[in-house]
Amino acid sequence: MVLVLGVWEAYVDLVSISSLVLPAPHAVLAALYTDRATLWHDLEPTAAEILLGILLAGACALASAVLLHFSGLARRALYPPLVATQAIPIPILAPLLVTWLGFGLLPKLIVIGLVCFFPIVVTTMSGLAAVDPDLVKLMRTLGAGRAQTFWRVEFPSALPGVFAGAKLAAVLAVIAVVLAEQAGSSSGLGYLLTVTVANLEMAEAFATVLVLVAFAIMLFTLLGVAERRAMPWIHERGNTQAR
Amino acid sequence: MISLEGVSHSFAVRRGGARLEVLSEVSLQVAGAETVAVVGPSGCGKTTLLELICGLQQPDTGTVRCAPAALMPQRDLLLPWLSALDNASLALRVRGVGRHGARAAARPWFERLGLDGFERARPHELSGGMRQRVAFLRTLLSGRPVLALDEPFASLDAITRAEMQRWLAHALEEERRTVVLVTHDVEEAVLLADRVLMLSPRPGRLIADVQVALPRPRVRTDAAVVALRASTLATLGVNA
Ligand SMILES: Nc1ncnc2c1ncn2[C@@H]1O[C@H](COP(=O)(O)OP(=O)(O)O)[C@@H](O)[C@H]1O
Ligand SMILES: [Mg+2]
Image (cartoon, rainbow over all chains, first blue to last red; front, top):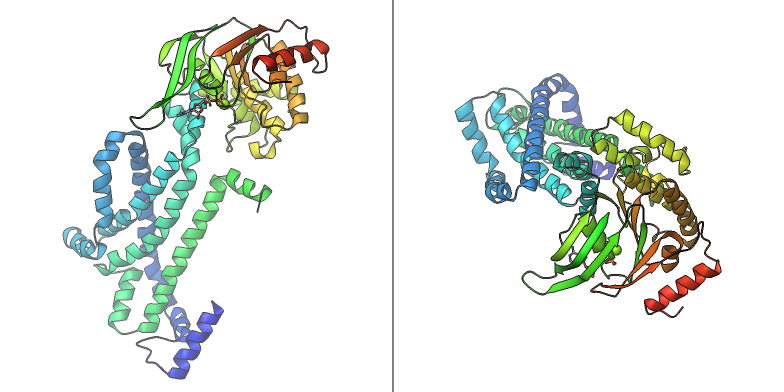
């Protein structure tokens, strides 16, 4: 990391490339400092969109995964349209949503939701499919019905899949929010990116990207912490065995 | 308690293809409070027989009539996210007993089974023998009249296994239930059971039904136990 930054700094200083092509790291850091008020101000709506979008996508994805897991009919009927939602090119869809729904929160939530929904569905379903069938049999002989077996065995077994999907979604949401904001908005880091690039303020644009990346890393890390909190048994086992 | 009449069972091995015949024309009766051991070589259909008894499979032909049975599976299958106490009382929770009630019902057993102090331990913190005891307790607390135990001690080392066999004999004497104990260990069968049923290699059919009329507690070095073990092995085609 330090090496890359050093080479980058040396390269820009020595070869003296135009800052329009590649701003030097020190210029990016300077922009990060001087523009801190703007960056902070624009982080707020973007962060809200990302968090709301992931929550929305997560809730729908969990419900869908459970439905698809338990109903072969739903699986056959709904999988193709679900795959289709994932294949829609977001750069085409985002401006259309803005035309239909305006500059508000809704079009951003739809874009983030569309991008984040599918990964969570897929990883949750593979988590549910990997549940030990002998555990399900055991629950039956203890008198458990479908719902009991689901809540006591299948859902906790599938949690690693849920978290894997959520971590993927967190990173994808950051990409999605930029596309959504660039298609039409009057605030947010994606908007800031559009403006700075249009004004050829490359150091400022890079500083904006830096904030987005930092936010993505923070989300990912927080999810990791939540994962260990929610599934202490996996963490503990890791500590007592091989690792 | 348990009655099987001419039960045969097979599994589809390939889609549309041949079927693997696992059990063939098995008939047996088990009376209430009787402990019956089922021995036979690996793959002869012992687990399948227990699943039929527990109603987890339907036989191809024949009839299975049985009081409600709880299964203690071959692997302990404790839930890693629950404490030992919550694993043991799982069946009570399933039946709608509240968390506190279920724990209170299971707690006295921990002392009786030599597990006191480990109520809050997670399964991975328990030794193999302790895990088997928790799994047995979970089966016992299901309140079902029939216990179907599938090779409960097969995965343990010889010393722990001997200890657990003594322990199970004791536990069953205190808490009389109808027990079907599957094992491939003939000695275990002779030590624990009132009756030993022997299955042939696959497809499993009943080849012998031996009463074990020995007084309890039984000791593995006792001449009568050794003799019965040898004759049972001979019936199964093994030279002891
Ligand atoms: N669900 C299944 N599908 C196909 N074959 C099975 C299934 N369950 C068991 N078998 C086969 O049936 C035979 C008997 O299995 P099992 O009852 O587990 O034997 P045992 O417990 O005596 O070792 C084995 O050959 C096994 O591979
Ligand atoms: Mg078996």
